[in-house]
Image 1 (cartoon, helix red, strand yellow):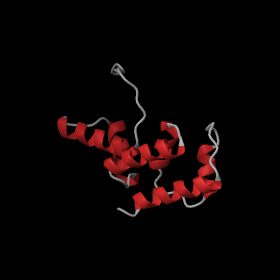
Image 2 (tube, rainbow, N blue to C red):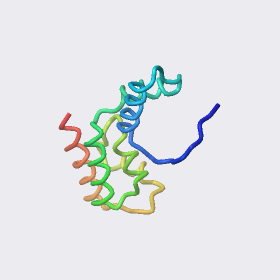
Image 3 (spheres, helix red, strand yellow):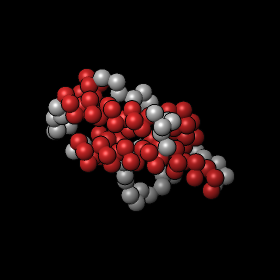
Image 4 (cartoon, helix red, strand yellow):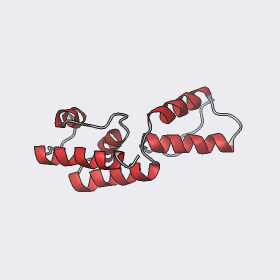
Length: 116
């Protein structure tokens, strides 16, 4: 039987990983879907939760991206390397970034990846 939803919030993959690890330590067993999701998050989440949140906020503040798009960018397994890759993500976003801003986004992402 599904549980009631009290709040819906977009979160990064690193946050998903943290939430499920906490739930796993508190309860005896995760559901099948939760376990598969945790396995996925463990495999593909490279940046710490703290750095993920900092990067997300920086993308929102500096470039005016929506939270949804910022979350998509920080949750990518392979960091962006070319502005055309960013164009695919921004396709439906009402904001237009200059080529310099796109390069700045890529540099910012790589500055967080280098900390790993």
